[in-house]
Length: 426
Image (cartoon, rainbow, N blue to C red; front, side, top):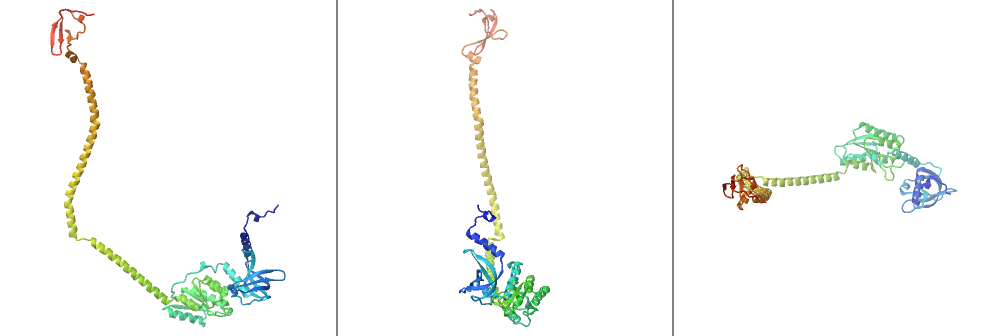
């Protein structure tokens, strides 16, 4: 039965496993110092270095990337004992781990580079080099602060460029030594003074070129933190191309030389003039186009305008036409009303006369039936009505006596008679 561990809860691919191993190694060993001997050294045209670092019992593959190699002053050799500082990483496609070397010295000696890497890691962890901290630079600032030596060539280079490209600028110099003992403290203090003064819109901080030792002040923690806390945008102007100082990383903009920094602040006069000319032309074109549009609109408006007399005559003609139009409208309306009334009358006639005709026909039928039952109709057929003296109809002969007076009603006229003889029928 397989032993259970939390890692068995998920099935990993090979690449996922190598990725996890890489994360574990790089997190557990961000930077290490290793001593050993160099074997199998390779120097391809790419500028990288590949070698194996070994002692008597084990070995590890190592690489120095071209950018790191430019910072390493020591030239390694096969069989040489060295002390290196670097990061352990894994190459996932082959599942191999290796040492990425950042600094190298002969075995037994200290390394300023190692101290610099340690300081870089600390400041980077604090976010001092973060791009989100960078402040935007002003366009054509009029008041410029400079932190450098008053006797150095950097100041003269800056003044020359500003004089050539700007008119009416104001420069505030915060003098500081830029190399030697105490230089870092003076540079940091000068930056703080310009911030306290508050007049500058931008600060140029730097010096001319020199050796690595000459430029060490700009790798000082004092200078880096002074740049980071500056409320005014800072341009680093350290005259070296090969390496990048910590001051360069902390500044809002890095310029390769003091001259380049001054050019960035002053801008290119010719380019600005061309830009201004282009904007002027665009403005004139836009104004002309706008004017033409207004002229066209004005023409269309003028065409629509008429003399007041024409407007009055037009309204007079319209007033003359209105009675006729009103009469036609009324006549048309009356015709419509008449047609509507006729239609309603037809509907009313259909609704009223049809039932009335039916009732008239039935009444005629009833009258004919009633007439056929009328005594007058019976009398017309030769019958007669006999009334006694009391005016009652005589229906039986034995209800009378001889000599009784009777009235005989005929279809036309009546007779007064007396009973002579009575004859009963069975």
